[in-house]
Length: 414
Image (cartoon, rainbow, N blue to C red; front, side, top):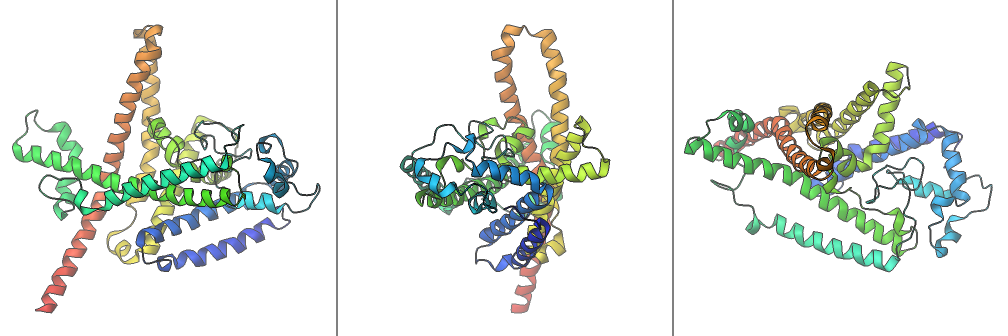
């Protein structure tokens, strides 16, 4: 891991990844698998850039020495693993540490570990190791449940009923259908039957679109992660503590900030936030931790995330990106910082109101429950609206392109 030429190492890794990324649409016959592979390559590149460029070699070496000496945070490793981890003191290269860090994007077991990477939210590995057999059986059981769920989810016989037919029709994404929440908020209290039908179907469409992105990503990525964890732990390469769930707890996502920091963004948080901090420090020429610097870092993280998704889409679907653009996802990520700032301003204002109007004994139970309910509602609303605002215009354009292509094929057939 320690290298006198870390940037040369990074250059070699970057060239290899760029070549693989350029041909990622040929990785398999499945577009979804190709997308996951392309995203993995960019996340891996960001992680390697964090290790070899952002971090000072001395920092990495200090952590490596701590690992070689089996510091307290690694003493949870079971006895049969010690021989694999404990190399001779003073060895110039600790290949075990290099392996541990190679795919460790959450930096588990190091001082850079993502704060919410463990279900408990601890900043270090759990103090008590889990038995291997118990861990493997549990992950196998969860894998089976996910497989059954995905079979049902993708079976057309179980498709969610949609008013006026199963999606997706072109008019569902037309400019007139892209303002559902505006119609909902400003239509008459007793809308006409046609408007009522439009609102109901529009709500179902948006739930379907958001779910069709989140559910497969969550289940399939978690399943790949579980398969790798079973292999690594079954072969005694790793210990169970080194393989916490890939995603955080969805119950903690009662604000937009917590949705990303506690649930969804754990895999990219460390490398992306480190690059964001590096860029903002270069621009401002200051490393002081201020509120403005924090918002600038957060904005930069979401911009990087959006660029990653846009680049993947451009590489896998260049024709559709040329005709209809592929910046919808990028815009959606950039919008998140606006929601985070807005909700923080609202939270501070509400705290002032609560302290003045609500007795302290009621705030501990009633207000906390109210915050959670309101927070979940807000996150759902924001997710649906941001998807509508950024995704629907692109889909409408793509469906127009498909309709034109089909019409041209039919005319040629005649």
